[in-house]
Length: 565
Image (cartoon, rainbow, N blue to C red; front, side):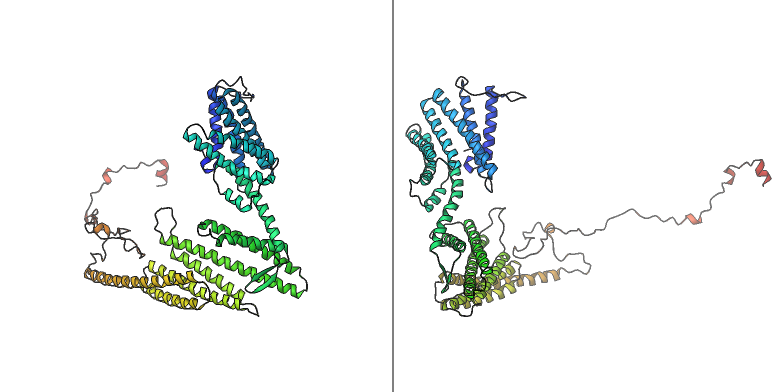
């Protein structure tokens, strides 16, 4: 557990086993040749030290961890990798079986029993992965469980706890084998609950469950789809003739139960976003089948009208789920905005991000309202749904304006923020009146709008007070600057931090106001310095210098120079 298994890091554990084997081979002087590999078997006569048994155990663990590493690939093992995975599990079974045989001869009774359980567990894993001989796999897991149950009754407390944990980890695999054999009435929901358990021995079971569960769920949906003949939406009944469309809609509806069920409050936001992505995929798949049917419908007007209505209903459901997903993102962003930044690596959420999310919500609501209002013969359910969309649009406008005001407040623009807060309050009160006039359960929206009105009132008071304080402070600063004005310009209007180190006054300014900190003047101003004097030689032109011709060398001419002068 200390070398990667606690976190499911099988690569790290395999490397640890390899390094441990290398050390064991060197310490036992049981290496396999220098250049050419020469195989050396471990037999009963070879085992003169307990470390030879360690070699067998770590060899089995290395092969098993390598198989589990291949099982945890991002896209799952392909055909070639799966063949390699099964080969590594076979190798693990081979080493575990040899380990069990030698422990039965060389070790004490407790160790031999535990080695036998270990070999049975490895054999069960191999058959589990091969999807065959489920009865033999069941017997292997049951024999391992029986040994661990007996071992858990004796020995020290730590050993008993380890054996009980091993029994609990083996239980899901046994139940799944019983399910495959047909001796259990295990339901799909119970399989999902088993998959929530933790432990290294359960990783292979979870991987198998992910593959098998999709097939089980698809089969269950196809059985339900046979009984589903129409889709009800806002008082309309649209026939669903295509089996693939029915299966896709049922898949989306089952996923929606996970979002709106009793356990939805305890589900983390990340998991909910994953469920939303699956819902979107299912609805897009259903729309694809519907539009393919439209293309092949021919001239049958009744069939085309039904398919157009079904496409409209599925698109509206997709729009509703999109709004719910964006509201979840808004909730996450609000929690990050309200939370203090404790960790330096935490990303700071700005009000502008919430403004962008509310822009998306306004666009989603407008699209949904246009889609619902596009029909000719409107039913009362459609009219009430359109009114609900109009009220939500007003509420989203109020929320968006609130965070625009917050962004202005952060920028230090008090007057704009004050005016926007008043506008938000008017929008929120208008939305409140309209929601209260609607027939339906809108307690959460009404509660949020009432809270928004209170925040607007308090924030507008704060902005008003801050604006007055900053105005008075600006007047004081202006009068101080005017008093410091000098005609020579020797004194600066504002002092920097380096010039007033003896005064306890911030040089950074208010955190809500974007202004440059006044630490030191940069680039530094020019200063007058002394330099070397310039000497002008005025007497040079008035000096008469003595003649130096007597000291100059006379040039002697040759014969040709005499002829030519």
